[in-house]
Length: 65
Image (cartoon, rainbow, N blue to C red; front, side):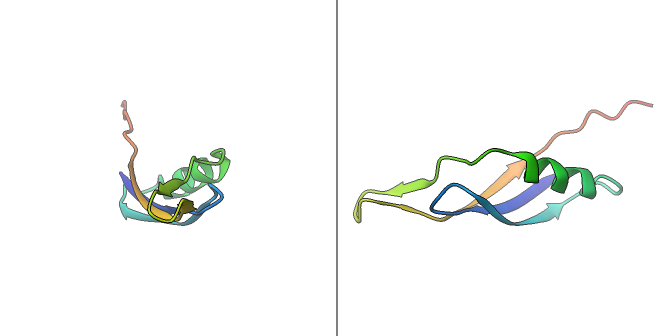
């Protein structure tokens, strides 16, 4: 499962969206993303400040019968 989101200048996660999902698990993935603590934002040296960045995150599920 691939999920994409923006890590804002302050480290908050914004606009999560599923790129490739597994039927029936999308709600759970969004719930997990909302529970994540703030991330360390990207830093651009040329302007010496934090910047927003796009992240594509892979989540693996082990499905057992």
